[in-house]
Figure 1 (cartoon, rainbow over the protein chains, first blue to last red):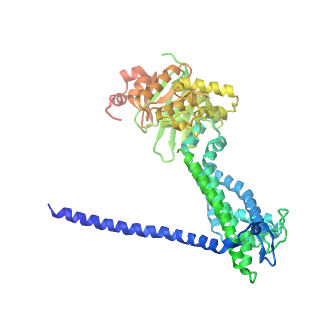
Figure 2: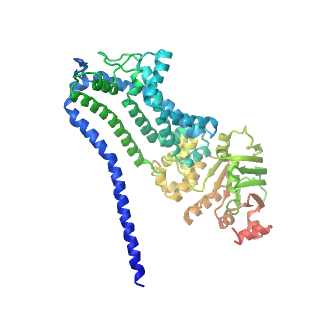
Figure 3: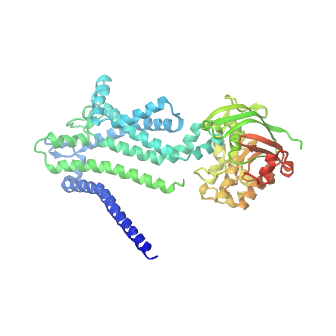
Length: 293
Length: 254
């Protein structure tokens, strides 16, 4: 009668040990994700903060870009982000609604899904070359905001489509059944019940997609980005400077570039992208508290 | 009991793609201004038949449908049938109360707004009337703007009934409407059926034999996709003609 309890306790102890070891390893893995982020952000802030000033954000660069500010690059990135949104958001959400609410599982929709997955896997430099071939040369848009936005838009589509479709599918099927049973058409049901419920998820996906587009260099390399422009763009057929490309230029193409300007530029780009990320998180948090299903 | 036929179901059959639940050769009359009960053990095809009447099965994976369902002589199974108009004439209350993620008020006006009713006075009147009919008015009249999900389960189910009543349909289908409710809420809904049957035709799948016996003017016993017996409710529960019906009613299987 006395032996079995002892044996049992031994087993329990070793189980507890393996539990502790697993917990430690998993925690370590999680920390491994956090540490580089803090290190990167911290290092860029440390090296670049001294470059940040009102003039840095509002002036044109001069003296071979070694002095002055980032104004044309900031404005260019804003334009490109807006252009990407105009192109990718309606198409992306439309495609997501089609896939989630209308499409049956057939050869066509399977082809669309495979296309989306493959689109997401294409290297961004290939998008850049494709954009140059199609928009800049073949459609003769020239190196322009239009060509750059179209290229970034196509690149962003898979992110927006898949997150929006996921958000739509998360809306309980019973809501659709109720709406239809009360005499709703499919579109009325989508517009009045499904879309409002899915909107926070869709907005989050859109922001994350645009954030990625805003930080990309390769797709704009051949389609829109200018090395240096002493003016702001005035139409969608103008070239423009853009933050990621500008960062590439001053880091690799301009000899004798002051290091704090390089890191300052990286910091501005980082803040731009991370604040979009923060916005997405806040929107998601805000709506999750209001949701009750 | 002399009654007018509201819905005539003629040799109706249905098969899902997975083949589990199906109906074969159902011929049945649903009488106007009566409580028509479809009862029997689970998997007998009662819910499927309900959802065939207002074409909600269109949303599911039905492989094969045969026969006809005539609503006032009009075949609702034909492809050209205007399903939106049909669903306004034939409302449904589901087993689990599903309130839409909106206020109590908007839940009730939802169907009317879909139908294009915008007039505030009409909408207000419809909300008051349908809440009174579903015995919910006294409990919620001073907080119509509150989110509907804040109501209790029993209140939510009465709201679902009110939502259907707001459209003033001709037929109301109820698919085990009290299966998740307490006895008091159940009694309220059953009382509502008796009060309103002079204005509506009810088709109800009850959640128990006892409820079937309580509410049935007419009763139809379903077993594994077939209609075993159909008749006046009081007669069927006192002296069923079919031995299967008797065995089920007396609790020998089910």
